[in-house]
Length: 64
Image (cartoon, rainbow, N blue to C red; front, side):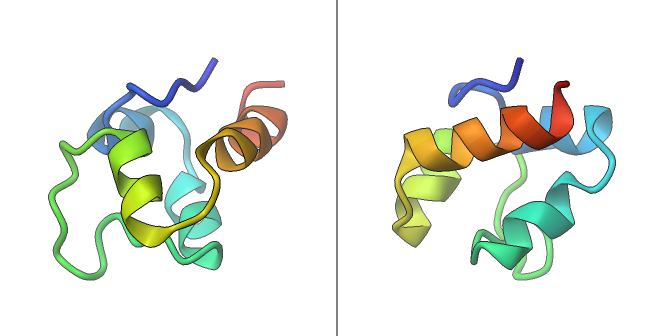
């Protein structure tokens, strides 16, 4: 299960394709040079979308 407290680095290692999924939603993990050790929640909040919606979408797509 993907949690808001997971670091982006952990998620990139475990879930192939998650970077593209996040980029489609305006959350750039690697391309713009942001630190990958930030938590998923920090990255989402910085870009503006609702954290619970993005976490739900991630779990729906990547943890089934």
